[in-house]
Image (cartoon, rainbow, N blue to C red; front, side):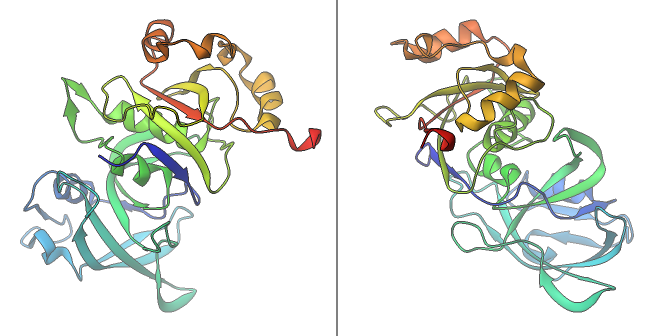
Length: 278
């Protein structure tokens, strides 16, 4: 498992929503040799890397006609289980006939995406429907998959769907669960959870920030950036439940699990000084 100190980079907007191919994405992530039939051509089955070169016609989030092409498919070298596939996807629309990368470069300068079933609305809520989302690897959705919160899996009898959703809120510092991010590119955070998929990094120099559920933060000791605190007090003050002294408990995780029973994921971050006080 990779080191738990993570970086937030890039937008969490997840590219294109494609109607009718959710089954394809669903299966492609579950088996070493995935296969699926496209609804538009029931007699054609694409297996494994044979999906490379496939062309899909759909619409983007604004309803415009878009043609997508899966230019390359590869296993994610950062996934110890070998379950994640990375897609290089290009698109073409009526405004520009040239093929363009669907994604922006991530921290490793890759322009790949992970296909996920369903879609996410403007508030950041997952909708399990007949659609598929290509989550670019610089997005919160893809980061959470690569950190072990694979929404199609079950660990210790618990589905990771809610863990993935809680992680996406945490990465974006979406405290109130409204879809509004309160973080910045390059911000370091440390992640840990009830299932111990990710474990707290000792002596990181970071302090406890918040405990997270699929609906946003359920207990906030402090905000990632001091300027955000006033917004949280205005929009969801009931979520400010921890004081800094309590967050320094010698057995922090056990204390958090007890006091925030709805929380699935927790995070630390560096204490920052308000820009106004400089």
